[in-house]
Length: 235
Image 1 (cartoon, rainbow, N blue to C red):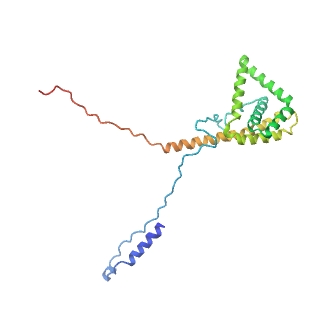
Image 2: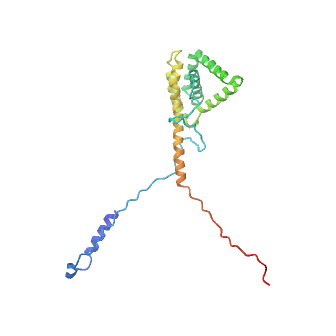
Image 3: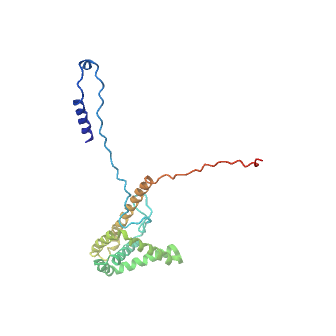
Protein backbone atom coordinates (compact mmCIF):
# COMPACT_ATOMS: atom_id res chain seq x y z
CA UNK A 1 0.00 0.00 0.00
CA UNK A 2 2.82 2.41 0.77
CA UNK A 3 4.54 1.78 -2.56
CA UNK A 4 1.41 2.46 -4.60
CA UNK A 5 0.56 5.68 -2.79
CA UNK A 6 4.07 7.05 -3.25
CA UNK A 7 4.04 6.41 -7.00
CA UNK A 8 0.57 7.89 -7.47
CA UNK A 9 1.61 10.97 -5.57
CA UNK A 10 4.68 11.35 -7.77
CA UNK A 11 2.64 11.10 -10.97
CA UNK A 12 0.07 13.58 -9.70
CA UNK A 13 2.77 16.04 -8.79
CA UNK A 14 4.30 15.86 -12.28
CA UNK A 15 0.93 16.49 -13.95
CA UNK A 16 0.20 19.51 -11.80
CA UNK A 17 3.62 21.16 -12.20
CA UNK A 18 4.16 24.36 -14.22
CA UNK A 19 4.77 24.11 -18.02
CA UNK A 20 8.37 23.52 -19.06
CA UNK A 21 10.00 26.16 -21.29
CA UNK A 22 11.44 25.11 -24.66
CA UNK A 23 14.98 26.00 -23.68
CA UNK A 24 14.60 23.92 -20.57
CA UNK A 25 13.49 20.96 -22.63
CA UNK A 26 16.74 21.13 -24.63
CA UNK A 27 18.88 21.15 -21.51
CA UNK A 28 20.31 18.02 -20.03
CA UNK A 29 17.59 16.11 -18.25
CA UNK A 30 17.69 16.34 -14.52
CA UNK A 31 18.22 13.18 -12.53
CA UNK A 32 14.99 11.48 -11.54
CA UNK A 33 14.86 10.23 -8.01
CA UNK A 34 14.12 6.55 -7.61
CA UNK A 35 10.69 5.79 -6.23
CA UNK A 36 10.48 5.06 -2.55
CA UNK A 37 10.88 1.40 -1.71
CA UNK A 38 8.25 -0.39 0.30
CA UNK A 39 9.56 -1.68 3.63
CA UNK A 40 8.20 -4.88 5.13
CA UNK A 41 8.44 -5.19 8.90
CA UNK A 42 8.29 -8.69 10.38
CA UNK A 43 6.69 -8.94 13.79
CA UNK A 44 8.33 -11.59 16.00
CA UNK A 45 6.20 -13.26 18.65
CA UNK A 46 8.49 -13.54 21.67
CA UNK A 47 6.00 -14.43 24.36
CA UNK A 48 7.19 -16.28 27.42
CA UNK A 49 7.16 -20.07 26.74
CA UNK A 50 4.33 -21.85 28.55
CA UNK A 51 5.00 -24.73 30.92
CA UNK A 52 3.89 -28.19 29.83
CA UNK A 53 0.44 -28.98 31.19
CA UNK A 54 0.69 -29.81 34.88
CA UNK A 55 4.35 -28.82 35.13
CA UNK A 56 5.89 -26.55 37.74
CA UNK A 57 9.05 -24.40 37.48
CA UNK A 58 10.92 -26.29 40.19
CA UNK A 59 10.41 -29.78 38.75
CA UNK A 60 13.54 -31.87 38.15
CA UNK A 61 13.21 -34.70 35.61
CA UNK A 62 15.59 -37.66 35.80
CA UNK A 63 19.03 -37.14 34.33
CA UNK A 64 19.27 -37.72 30.55
CA UNK A 65 21.03 -40.87 29.43
CA UNK A 66 22.80 -39.24 26.47
CA UNK A 67 20.80 -41.26 23.94
CA UNK A 68 17.51 -39.38 24.00
CA UNK A 69 16.13 -41.14 27.07
CA UNK A 70 16.27 -40.70 30.84
CA UNK A 71 17.85 -42.56 33.73
CA UNK A 72 14.58 -43.62 35.32
CA UNK A 73 14.21 -46.28 38.04
CA UNK A 74 13.38 -48.74 35.24
CA UNK A 75 16.88 -48.80 33.75
CA UNK A 76 19.35 -51.67 34.10
CA UNK A 77 16.88 -54.15 35.59
CA UNK A 78 17.04 -57.91 35.78
CA UNK A 79 14.18 -59.97 34.36
CA UNK A 80 12.59 -60.36 37.79
CA UNK A 81 12.94 -56.66 38.57
CA UNK A 82 11.34 -55.77 35.23
CA UNK A 83 8.30 -57.89 36.08
CA UNK A 84 8.11 -56.41 39.57
CA UNK A 85 8.40 -52.83 38.33
CA UNK A 86 5.54 -53.50 35.92
CA UNK A 87 3.46 -54.86 38.79
CA UNK A 88 4.16 -51.69 40.81
CA UNK A 89 3.18 -49.51 37.85
CA UNK A 90 -0.11 -51.36 37.44
CA UNK A 91 -0.72 -51.17 41.20
CA UNK A 92 -0.30 -47.37 41.08
CA UNK A 93 -2.61 -47.23 38.06
CA UNK A 94 -5.29 -49.24 39.85
CA UNK A 95 -5.08 -46.98 42.90
CA UNK A 96 -4.93 -43.69 41.03
CA UNK A 97 -6.90 -44.27 37.84
CA UNK A 98 -9.62 -46.50 39.31
CA UNK A 99 -12.45 -47.65 37.05
CA UNK A 100 -11.90 -50.82 35.06
CA UNK A 101 -8.22 -50.86 35.99
CA UNK A 102 -9.05 -52.11 39.48
CA UNK A 103 -10.71 -55.26 38.17
CA UNK A 104 -7.99 -55.75 35.57
CA UNK A 105 -5.23 -55.47 38.16
CA UNK A 106 -6.93 -57.86 40.57
CA UNK A 107 -7.39 -60.35 37.73
CA UNK A 108 -3.68 -60.10 36.95
CA UNK A 109 -2.76 -60.83 40.58
CA UNK A 110 -5.02 -63.88 40.59
CA UNK A 111 -3.94 -65.30 37.23
CA UNK A 112 -0.21 -64.86 37.91
CA UNK A 113 -0.11 -65.36 41.67
CA UNK A 114 2.59 -68.02 41.56
CA UNK A 115 4.81 -66.16 39.11
CA UNK A 116 4.53 -62.89 41.06
CA UNK A 117 5.37 -64.61 44.36
CA UNK A 118 8.50 -66.11 42.80
CA UNK A 119 9.37 -62.71 41.35
CA UNK A 120 9.06 -61.03 44.77
CA UNK A 121 11.36 -63.67 46.32
CA UNK A 122 13.93 -63.22 43.55
CA UNK A 123 13.96 -59.43 43.98
CA UNK A 124 14.40 -59.81 47.74
CA UNK A 125 17.34 -62.17 47.23
CA UNK A 126 19.02 -59.68 44.92
CA UNK A 127 18.76 -56.94 47.54
CA UNK A 128 20.10 -59.23 50.26
CA UNK A 129 23.04 -60.23 48.08
CA UNK A 130 23.79 -56.63 47.18
CA UNK A 131 23.29 -54.84 50.50
CA UNK A 132 23.64 -57.53 53.17
CA UNK A 133 22.06 -56.68 56.51
CA UNK A 134 20.95 -53.27 55.24
CA UNK A 135 18.91 -54.72 52.39
CA UNK A 136 15.49 -53.94 53.90
CA UNK A 137 16.11 -50.19 54.15
CA UNK A 138 17.52 -50.13 50.62
CA UNK A 139 14.57 -52.10 49.29
CA UNK A 140 12.01 -49.88 51.05
CA UNK A 141 13.69 -46.72 49.78
CA UNK A 142 13.82 -48.02 46.20
CA UNK A 143 10.16 -49.06 46.26
CA UNK A 144 9.09 -45.69 47.70
CA UNK A 145 10.90 -43.88 44.90
CA UNK A 146 9.40 -46.25 42.35
CA UNK A 147 5.84 -45.70 43.56
CA UNK A 148 6.39 -41.93 43.54
CA UNK A 149 7.83 -42.15 40.04
CA UNK A 150 4.72 -43.82 38.64
CA UNK A 151 2.42 -41.38 40.46
CA UNK A 152 3.77 -38.31 38.59
CA UNK A 153 0.65 -36.06 38.37
CA UNK A 154 1.30 -34.31 35.00
CA UNK A 155 1.50 -37.64 33.16
CA UNK A 156 -1.40 -39.39 34.87
CA UNK A 157 -3.91 -39.10 32.04
CA UNK A 158 -1.67 -40.75 29.44
CA UNK A 159 -0.24 -43.13 32.05
CA UNK A 160 -3.72 -44.41 32.94
CA UNK A 161 -4.51 -44.99 29.27
CA UNK A 162 -1.26 -46.92 28.77
CA UNK A 163 -1.91 -49.01 31.88
CA UNK A 164 -5.40 -49.88 30.71
CA UNK A 165 -4.02 -51.09 27.36
CA UNK A 166 -1.35 -53.17 29.11
CA UNK A 167 -3.88 -54.79 31.45
CA UNK A 168 -6.17 -55.61 28.54
CA UNK A 169 -3.31 -57.48 26.84
CA UNK A 170 -2.23 -59.14 30.09
CA UNK A 171 -5.69 -60.65 30.48
CA UNK A 172 -4.93 -63.09 27.66
CA UNK A 173 -1.47 -64.18 28.84
CA UNK A 174 -0.56 -67.74 29.67
CA UNK A 175 0.60 -68.24 33.29
CA UNK A 176 4.26 -68.50 32.28
CA UNK A 177 4.23 -65.62 29.80
CA UNK A 178 4.30 -62.69 32.24
CA UNK A 179 8.11 -62.16 32.34
CA UNK A 180 8.40 -61.97 28.56
CA UNK A 181 5.38 -59.69 28.39
CA UNK A 182 6.83 -57.38 31.07
CA UNK A 183 9.95 -56.75 29.00
CA UNK A 184 7.89 -55.04 26.29
CA UNK A 185 5.07 -53.68 28.45
CA UNK A 186 7.27 -51.76 30.90
CA UNK A 187 8.68 -49.35 28.27
CA UNK A 188 5.17 -48.74 26.92
CA UNK A 189 3.70 -47.87 30.27
CA UNK A 190 6.69 -45.65 31.03
CA UNK A 191 6.47 -43.80 27.70
CA UNK A 192 3.99 -41.11 28.86
CA UNK A 193 6.30 -40.13 31.70
CA UNK A 194 9.34 -39.99 29.43
CA UNK A 195 7.36 -37.82 27.01
CA UNK A 196 6.59 -35.38 29.82
CA UNK A 197 10.26 -35.24 30.83
CA UNK A 198 11.21 -34.39 27.23
CA UNK A 199 8.50 -31.71 27.02
CA UNK A 200 9.70 -30.20 30.27
CA UNK A 201 13.34 -30.15 29.17
CA UNK A 202 12.35 -28.42 25.91
CA UNK A 203 10.42 -25.84 27.91
CA UNK A 204 13.36 -25.30 30.26
CA UNK A 205 15.71 -24.67 27.34
CA UNK A 206 13.25 -22.34 25.59
CA UNK A 207 12.52 -20.43 28.79
CA UNK A 208 16.20 -19.94 29.55
CA UNK A 209 16.68 -18.40 26.10
CA UNK A 210 13.62 -16.20 26.54
CA UNK A 211 14.81 -15.02 29.96
CA UNK A 212 18.24 -14.18 28.56
CA UNK A 213 16.67 -12.04 25.83
CA UNK A 214 14.48 -10.21 28.30
CA UNK A 215 16.99 -9.63 31.07
CA UNK A 216 18.28 -6.08 31.13
CA UNK A 217 21.89 -5.40 31.97
CA UNK A 218 22.19 -3.89 35.46
CA UNK A 219 22.81 -0.16 35.62
CA UNK A 220 25.66 0.66 37.97
CA UNK A 221 25.64 4.19 39.35
CA UNK A 222 29.08 5.54 40.21
CA UNK A 223 29.12 8.46 42.58
CA UNK A 224 31.71 11.16 41.94
CA UNK A 225 34.00 11.69 44.91
CA UNK A 226 35.44 15.16 45.55
CA UNK A 227 38.59 15.16 47.59
CA UNK A 228 38.67 17.93 50.17
CA UNK A 229 41.98 19.25 51.38
CA UNK A 230 42.01 19.25 55.16
CA UNK A 231 44.69 21.75 56.06
CA UNK A 232 45.13 24.23 58.89
CA UNK A 233 42.46 26.90 59.09
CA UNK A 234 43.35 30.29 57.68
CA UNK A 235 44.08 32.88 60.39
